[in-house]
Image (cartoon, rainbow, N blue to C red):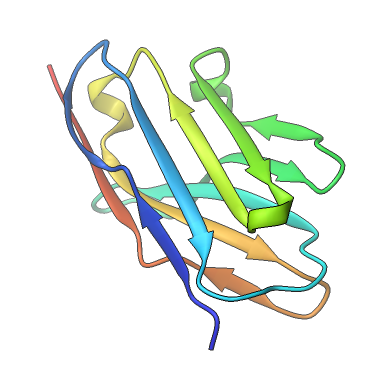
Length: 115
């Protein structure tokens, strides 16, 4: 069974940067979109950024201008470059791959931004 494996989370001071990566453990055919979501304690899981196969991107208003999503189709990998991090960015970040039939989720990686 294909799994999504995330890496790159951790503890960083406000104003710092982190880069998250998410790779599929096996081949996933015809990925329509890749995305990053986040969930803080007591909150719902919200979309942070998404990217289609054609490279169209969309971002939550709270991260526009600070976060950049990218993908490597050949490696079934998605990235999230996070700059100018704020304490309110603290959450568990999840990657998500969608095909026409299936919806894959990573296990989550903790990002903590200290003030």
